[in-house]
Image (tube, rainbow, N blue to C red):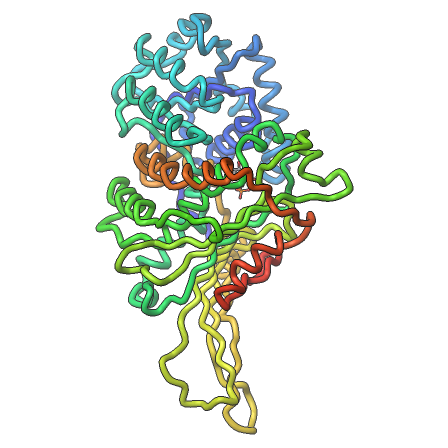
Length: 485
Ligand code: BG6
């Protein structure tokens, strides 16, 4: 099955930080792939802007190398690559000064969609926004795209929001959370709101608990400097995990429109009870070898968590009494992200004590091997009485849709949404602030108490304390396995 591709309008896209890691790994390869799929029209122009004093030829060579490394040989078509490189322009720019802004203004064309991607440190957001506005490079219809980290606490997030709001309206600001661009994350909404099957059961009366796991095998590697001042709570929970929780817990919006969606997500964040000590466990991977967090972060005294598990309560009519358990960590046993909704026991068993009842679980696998799995009880085949067994109704999306379906990377989809002017999968300013408002007191608490994270072995499922968090409630975490339920 081949996905339907609807071309976007012609645009000028300026990428600030065009020589940086994100541009090389995600943005430029993503744009190439969309061009290859026919979604980007020929007249579209991509303008790289960065501090480095490069000629256009040097910039094109850098981009060619990035495509080679990150697009994959099957999708690299020599003549398309040439076309793509020809559509690039480059401007050396001083984000905080005056250099390069006239050159940039000269590159921008009237009458096409204008988008500005701030793939730079958040400290530069305000300066760039100001110059775009004051020099008339951005107009009322222009869009700006900003990356995480969007602040490191509520105060810094508010400052960033205010800096952007000085020059741009909220409907022009696209705050990226790349998890919202993932195909299966959007599938969560389809599962819930395009089927009658689950929604009637989707509440505290029928759901025992929900588990959200995002496990990674990578360590903090070359990002130690950033990560050590961030930790799993700021790096993964405040944004990605919170968004997953919102999509699972929110009320059905009246339509799939940006503000309808974002209003409902915001209500979930606001309904979260404050997290108390005892409801979370922080971990740090430790080893005698090179895969030791302290070595990778180059900070022998670090108390930063590379893992966190927590038990959340959404205090509203729908969810009162159903805990949401979240965990995420680096250097874990496998790369596996999934959401598991565990349903309650039937009110009465007609099959007697000898049949051990197992709970119904709906598992939505986000990555890898995106799919869904519903565990149900059936009769064990054969004579010998009514013995029950739980089996998985397992569906891999790749198989169900035909293996040739090409799932675009989250960034590809999100950039195309920017050009289309659709903010549904982007975070609104108040959502980001609400998430920080919930996260901040938790971090303040452990910083004041000088809590040390609990060590766990690289390649494990996290610290012992995380298992206990569940055991105390008579529940257990699902196994972390590569792409399997
Ligand atoms: C990023 C975090 O936002 O998301 C990284 O900064 C993390 O630490 C990454 O590894 C995970 O994204 P994905 O798409 O690989 O699940």
